Length: 238
Image (cartoon, rainbow, N blue to C red):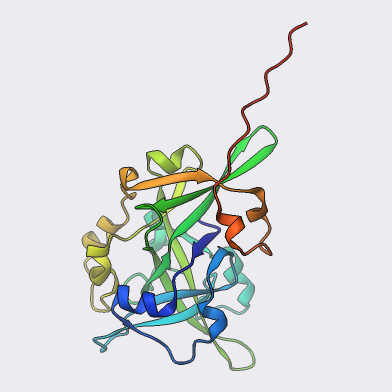
């Protein structure tokens, strides 16, 4: 699962790293560092439209609303899509061949339960470097005729590092596979399936963060800062 993540790079930096065009409609608020991105909020995406040679940066609602949906609330259940079964789920099966995107991040969070406490951990790639989740997107019109573009993050079996905290992890696309994943003409199911493999745990690290990240209102650097865990209390012997 992936229910929270972090992106602190600027749009200009993302445009350079992903060789993408900036959308002039993006506003300054969407360029602020984000330390606690949550479902239903806008997220930055990279995509390449059919017939276009250039990638572009846009923002979408996190939580995919299928084009055929009657109610946008269905998106609240579609923040993640299991990579193993996307061709079996009506909301996703047609999108995997034509509406793939990258969702940039520089960290994501998972929670490990210890007794009554759920301790949040941040996971990074290459000491806080930029990476990208595999995503799918769709376009939906609400009853007012307004178009809402939304996306979902694909998940796969957790690698050895993440498995200590959760049995699922987001699909992280290696940079050398960006062009393959974004290609609007790709219909090679085997090539796509290869991308769904768990990311190399040796290229990742994790560390505990403060409980303040549990509250979506806490979107600041302190929410992502490492903390020291208290050692478990020893039972007193009488």
